[in-house]
Length: 198
Image (cartoon, rainbow, N blue to C red; front, side):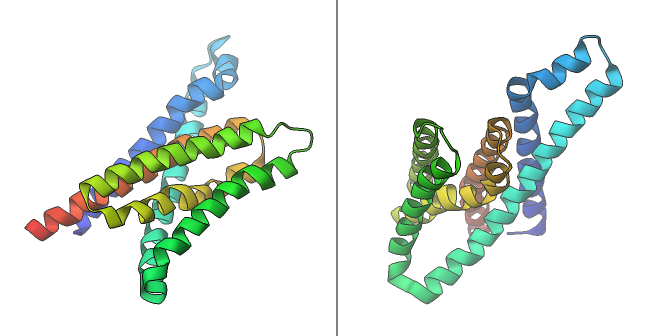
């Protein structure tokens, strides 16, 4: 991968994270906009927009750090565990999904289990779809690493919002994280294959 292509990928991922968080904030944090629109306060509105845009840029950078950490961990796992690495990845996927449901449910006193269960099912469904596309565009061996990245790495990146509490920021963070992670995962082989063909 050339530095020019890496910079392009970095900037486009940054843009996706910023724009998606800003759009999500219109729905999840509408009261922040209502306060500055009634009555209309221009400087406060610009401040709110920049605040959520800045959040999105931070989420995007977290996603990109996670992606490059994943590339390193995946190579390390292949080198150390060899044939066992896909099985270990599947175990970690299952444990992460269990953690998303069970431990979050135990920490939330008096809450129903269904919101935590649906969150894990939703993340798994999106991850399976992205992993399927990745394996179709590359090869079948890419399915498990892609699933591992989309479930495990996304959840690790999501931890700050999960610990902070408050469902608004949990959803405000996960939407751009999933989009940025899927974008990077599906773009990588296109960039590297074009380098090989050149």
